[in-house]
Image (tube, rainbow, N blue to C red; front, top):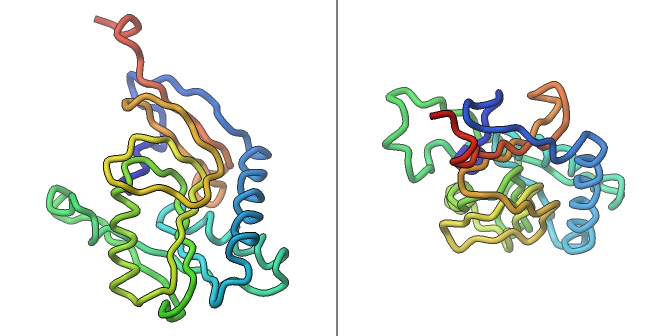
Length: 198
């Protein structure tokens, strides 16, 4: 995923800093669900669509929380944006293409697009292109767990769990138990020049 620059394991030259533990991440998900319910709970045809690989897992968690708050099921789908990336031509000769799974029509619906980390905005742009190829929603809103800044495109989230102030070389990693065995947010900070080994 374009936004998700964080590695699954520590990277040489980067120092890991713990940002959010499991309980804190759970509170952010609850906050996101509360804001979605407040702003879009009465919207016609509310659905959640998560960007793979972690945005779709967050969307499923949010759907469960929304069902409890709204007293009705909120459909959830997932997008694989690989073929819509603006750097697709520079990927490996055999890029891994996942499957988009949206089992409901998008026309006329209020779609909340869900992603884990908002960075350059290029992943969101690709997701919007794909959504609009699949239908014509009445509205598309963006909910992200973490906004780390560093936008390259004029895109901002409607709902943000937490904003982090990080340097361009830093990497933010969201860990989710379904993929990573635990829930956490970790910041990998790039070493300063004085800390680098010559």
